[in-house]
Length: 186
Image 1 (tube, rainbow, N blue to C red):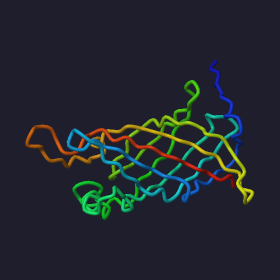
Image 2 (image 1 turned 135 degrees about the vertical axis):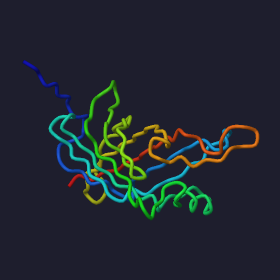
Image 3 (image 1 turned 30 degrees about the vertical axis):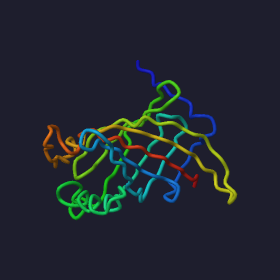
Image 4 (image 1 turned 180 degrees about the horizontal axis):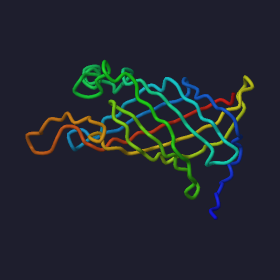
């Protein structure tokens, strides 16, 4: 006979549907450039829902991002990232993340799910921190979360690169994605 373990929700987080507040949520990324520095950028989160169950394992997350909104502070680089060499936004217009499980690890949580970028889906694990809840001046109950994950861009078919004269390549393979999420309880 098997037993199912359930983990209590973090203090302050209550069951229900939480809509991700797009104006207070950011998805950012960092990737090594020329082996000596990092390029940082953002991609807009365009839709998202967190469904909190009665216990942690019954919680799910669904998020959509729009790679055509990529911003790195350099218009030429942004255009290159949107092109067929990288994100190919004409063919692969949206990125998605759909959770398949949530577990507690110490004081943090891990959200496991399917991340789809460039038409390729890979299972990833987001290290997630719950930052608490608050009622804003408009009476909305908000919850805050931060999550990070490191991926291999090659695993998602993002293989463009250029060799450097001194050796190495222009764009690193490891991409660190960070999410800063504010959600409003429905």
